[in-house]
Length: 230
Image 1 (cartoon, rainbow, N blue to C red):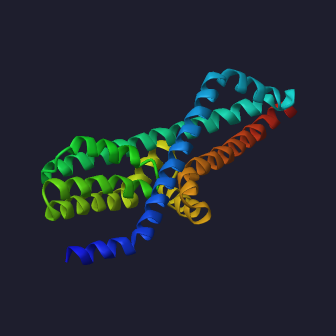
Image 2: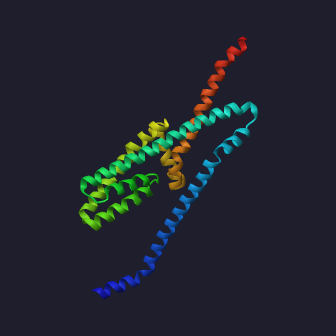
């Protein structure tokens, strides 16, 4: 039996090595992307005032006041998106921690933190946070606890994806939950994981721009009679 198992392993070693290579390549690509994002973010934070000053100098003088008001609308919307995402992370991590503590899984707090951080990544974040939960459960308590942990995580993500995410993100960014759902679906359908990650910020920018032009135009109409009367 041992000999047959070894022969089968040797026969499939190419397939195993290819799968391991793909996983390693994906992990390295994700680490490189995260490092690149952090580096760009650091440069933007350091030179923030210079970048803002340059962008404000681009529009002509007569449009500069409108540009400043538009950027304030967009900044307010994006700040709400960030607050909503942080809220989702906190809720996801807390629910994961509490559920794993109840079922008696070791390292529940650490696994809850991992689940909260991984909730930043649409779809694949769920998989990445579920794998260590199942592996630790199998290694410490067996497949029964592993199934309980898997079931709890799936329940959390069902609850989060259908109810909590649209509500939390919609309340924080002042976007209707239906718009949030459609934005996520459209972003994922068009550009995959990256599209789903950027869907809500893009929807926030579009909504903020639309609200700005509507309110700004209404203000102009209200001022016109006063100008003509004088």
